[in-house]
Amino acid sequence: MFAVVVTVVFVAPIATVVAAGFAGSWTGPLPSNLGFAHFNRALSGDNVASLSVSLQTALIAGAIALVLGTWAALTAREAPGPMRRLVDAVFHIPIALPSVAIGLGLLIAFNSRPLLLGGTKWIVIVAHTVLVMAFAFSSVSAALERLDPAYEQAAESLGASRFRVLRTVTLPLLLPALGAAAGLAVALSMGELGATVMVYPATWKTLPVTIFGLSDRGQVFSAAACTTALLVVTLLALLILGRIRGRAAVR
Image (cartoon, rainbow, N blue to C red; front, side):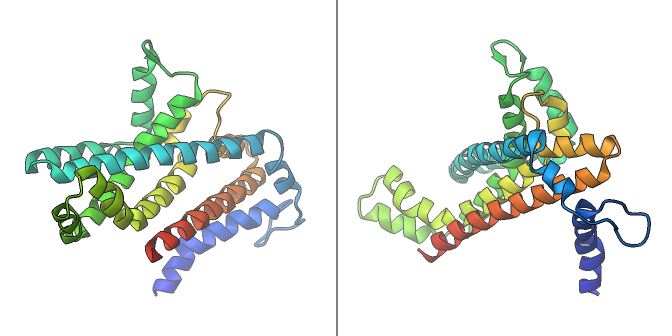
């Protein structure tokens, strides 16, 4: 039953999208006039530029979210109970709110000086950072809860400073969790649409926005080809991060 549910809910829709990318037409139960015409367009011109923008945004936003989320998790760990709960609630607000509301809020907040980010790529990066930071914070917080404090206590008893304990003991032990948090942040950023539609400038259009525009104009097969390219690039990024995470776990 589990295999049936996974096939119907997950595998079949993705397989349909990939098949539609190869289709020249689809009037029967199966696609016809198969070819690479749509993929050639998906990997050229504005579409490949949008793919590059998505990848750059995901890597920058993921890195910022990982640093800030880790910093917040480490700080909240040392804070009193009420402050820890407050920090946890603040970092999880973006999950509770629609992404469109986050995008509109950022558009209003950063549309005047001194923080005039509207019309630049940075407002897109900030939007993605806000949306994925909660997942980085949660991953690192969960890892810290499982971390045996005896390692840090042993280092402190040998005269190591707090910064040295953090650098040589805590962060190396957290590397697998950091790798998982980075992978999740990149994957979520690559597919983000709701907030991006609200804030993106014409010079920094991500691939999900391009896909939305193609499907809205009725170019479903081209949208499917772009979606397939987005899936492949996202999976490749996750595989690379997974290998880094695996090596960190071994160490």
